[in-house]
View 1 (cartoon, rainbow, N blue to C red):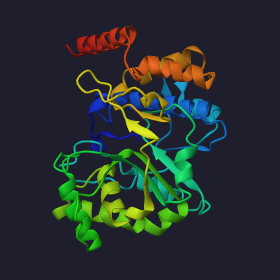
View 2 (view 1 turned 90 degrees about the horizontal axis):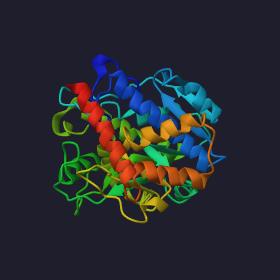
View 3 (view 1 turned 135 degrees about the vertical axis):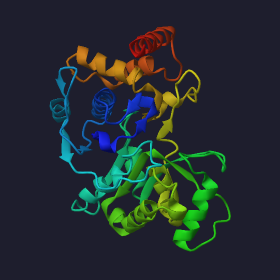
Length: 323
């Protein structure tokens, strides 16, 4: 997404607001790394990239040219789903998934779609995620959080009450929290259930009891609560891996997952991967070599001394620029 100043919101892990060109470049580099990693590990997979503006030139490289060389189909689709309330100060463009799926409505109804965040590194084949759509209408990623822990301004107990209002039922236990980094469905399932997402957007836009509903995590969690048997959990496919100095959730064995969500690595490991790919003129490395490089630069499952020192240097340079 390319936000203008009037649309800007804060993206903490990227280091600023979404209209800042430096912040946008963080995401463009991540996009190149994501699609490169997807192609390295899934040579025949159909890849599509949706954006609301023309991909730019980053560090002397045309993002459009790089993606097209990977066989990525680029679709420019305007964003129409943005919560317009003063309280929405963070992650203001994350409801773009609704526009993306609506734009795909003319595809064959059996088409299987997997959407992920761009700060994901694809470390292996993703056939298993698509296979889940053979027996379920949706696939999501469940995070086990306390029921009273705030999730971007709202906890699971509050989301449970809102889901009950929408579906006219009483939930005996708190609903599941689905993260925003993975969403999978078929075109047929989206067409059958998209009214639930459209209705929730209208309620969120109007405020009232839905005033705190503003991110894709809220949307996935609330809607999926009403159709629980239709949703598979992608626990063996993806993990939100925090690799920051203060928060680290990576465990040995996580490197075997096919999808690594690395929110704290956008300005570090993912940037290093972009630079490494640029140094080899974006020629695709063998999958095993790419995995080893990604582990080294992103600190999966642990950070070596070289990465720790490099990260420290990047932070020191950034702090010097702020003075």
